[in-house]
Image 1 (cartoon, rainbow, N blue to C red):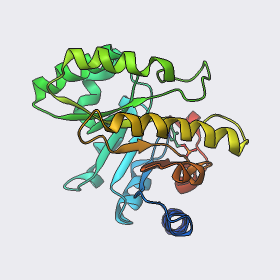
Image 2: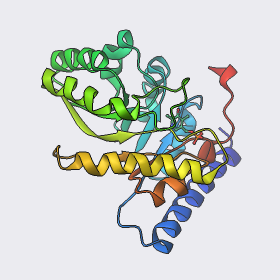
Image 3: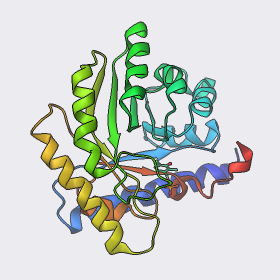
Image 4: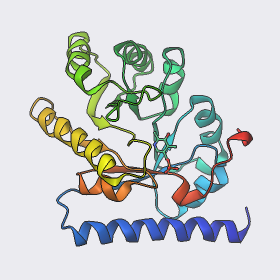
Amino acid sequence: MTQQRANEIKDNIKHIQDDMAEIAAKYNLPQKTTLMAVTKTFPAEDVAVALESGLTLFGENRIQEAYSKFQNDVFKDKTFDLHIIGHLQRNKAAHAVEVMSMCQSIDKNETLAAINDKAVKLGKQIDYLIEVNTSYEPQKSGVAPDMLDALLDEIGEANYSNCHIRGLMTVGPLTDNAMQIGHAFANLQSMFIRLQDKYDNFDILSMGMSDDYKLAMLEGSTLVRIGSALFGHRDYSKK
Ligand SMILES: *Cc1c(COP(=O)(O)O)cnc(C)c1O
């Protein structure tokens, strides 16, 4: 880790935090929005700089990567939260429980059943969000909006002792069309507001990434997941 790299990450964090504060003030937004640093493909040393800068919420997509990265000594005795935000296969769910405090990408009851089994064994409580495919892109994970209630009913019947729903998550559509992106976020927000009557502690609306966090904040996002705008371009070949 060069000093230059550390400064670059610190500057990026400050820039995003300032921008988020400016957006919230300018549009008089009613909600508070938390900044998550998405650390996939970036080394533990980069995460340590973010931690040093005061960020305490991190997101990873893959369990194995999350597991090996956050075992690093730099995280010893540090307080932070790690959320899994990528598609979670059922056979990885048990392993995930060992590292995450929240899974943001639940779109199947079976995955949650596997998480709960392991959480019971470890005596751990796991929060989760339902991922909704608001853009209907077939390659994307997430439950289709018109299947959300059926999924919630199925989960409700299972009555999991150690898993607790906290809200909804989406990945915005892959387009430059701001109206289309805003529409997807507004759609998720309306589902979120509707479900708030039904659940206690249903308070997390996770939407917005490096390229669309402003649009997400305008539609009520309470948690933005930012990777490349903090750490730079991702090189997937390294992982
Ligand atoms: C990678 C990823 C992000 C961060 O994306 P950036 O465009 O780099 O900010 C956010 N959410 C999910 C689900 C991701 O997979």
